[in-house]
Length: 411
Image 1 (cartoon, rainbow, N blue to C red):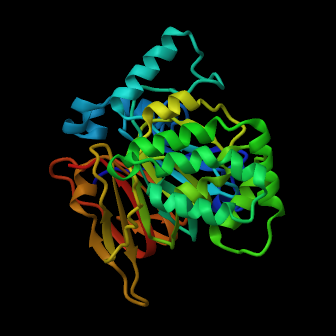
Image 2: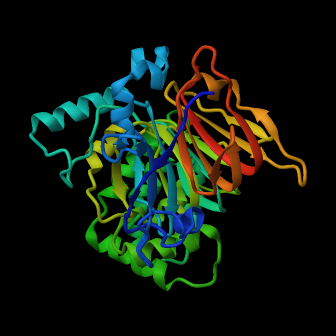
Image 3: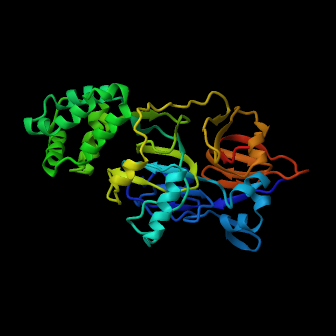
């Protein structure tokens, strides 16, 4: 039988995290060092150098990164080992109580150039004003475990202009005057033939609004009454958290999306987005590169963000599973996300794992129920690393009532 290794993973305690989502999923009986009331934002599963998972061996505990480095062909498979020196993906639980920063991630060429540039500038790897912490790109997929709200992709110039008109109609004259250049940028003759250029101009003007206009914007949003549209509700929340930040009107120029459990959205590099509230599994290329534009107290680098953004309008496509073993479409080489539901009342599901899972390095986490993997129990909240099955090894078999999310390297 093929070997696999239960993981002990590290928690990231960013201020936007939820004090409840991850502890509730993991269970307070686990060995995770939960502290009541302290935010648990992310749980990292993988071999990323920043927070690698740990595996327990007869000789003691070892990081997953060290385990793989000791025999890459065995633990990654020959094809993956030739191309990467560690797992090429980073798997997470993401638990947002408050909105994450409005952000985008670089493509591969941008990441390599930015990482080298910041190295040449002698920026420390963990410097708070560093944007490129590695040389990799960061496409990603977010899949909801609870109802999940986020924003992603620019609306069309026409739609933004229409929403701004509704928004500004009851606004005081100084604010309407301050926003005139924004409205004009969206209505320029090129907006229809070249919407990306119009949206670039719009965002540049927005980020360079005067402090007086930014303050007037915050005051107007917090004092306005009479509407309960989701965009208004979000803007009120943002204005309370980040007064004076022009990104508080992001729900007007970005698409707001809501996911129900099991639904997902894939984001390629360069797409402006922000996750707002909910618990999900997040899978991405093995990178921690983030270019922020607002809704945060962390480092913001507007010129660098503008360099990496894709300004073409984009409406997020919500992916909905349609079977009990479903692989989410994700057009990238580093990762693939599969969900398996083992159900059946008094019957027991007994199924060989999908071929992609058996042939490539994978990490799985049980988010509901309890799974028996070839007789070894994985409880809710437990995760494991699965090397590819070797020649002659019996395939792993799943049994039980459970929901299991699997991150693997596409073959």
